[in-house]
Image (cartoon, rainbow, N blue to C red; front, side):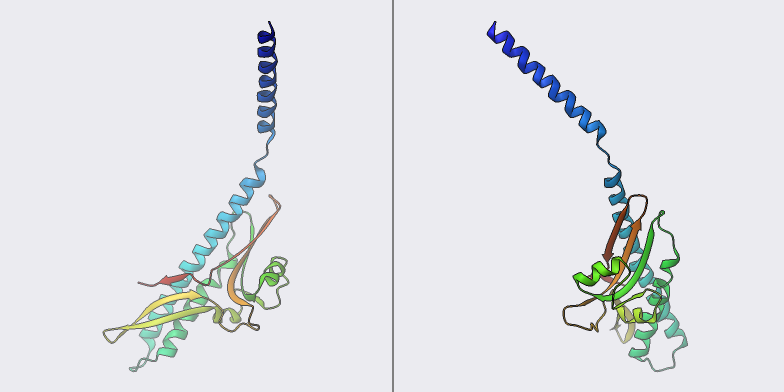
Length: 196
């Protein structure tokens, strides 16, 4: 009889545990998790837009230089034309809407403290992406293949930080009022796009 009562007590405890666990699981709200995933994915999509816009713009600027250039090729002028083409494409990205989220693209010199400040719009050394200061954050390399100049690569990095502990980035601030999330990401300095 003791065994039967012990069995009933264990069975009743197990039933109560399973019932309360299923109640907790059914009340679990995934809204914040889904919101964070959407915000993160929007950031990744904007990064891809920056890369692709920069690549296409650099090609357009370089080709325009080649069509309008005098007989003698000038490397510095070709680089500036490619950078300008990339800048013109990237600078228009703030005009886009991103899945009901407020997204702002900017360039600037930041450290950890400045990244936090940029999320609130208070970064000391940051500019909206359409500002001419952002032209310095686009780097283009031109290579020569069989005496024929070609675009080599494009990367995004500010190379004149005001202080040694700062680094230059193209940043993205995303805010979702619906989910109550603010998110900041930036184009990594190590990302290089090879142009073919």
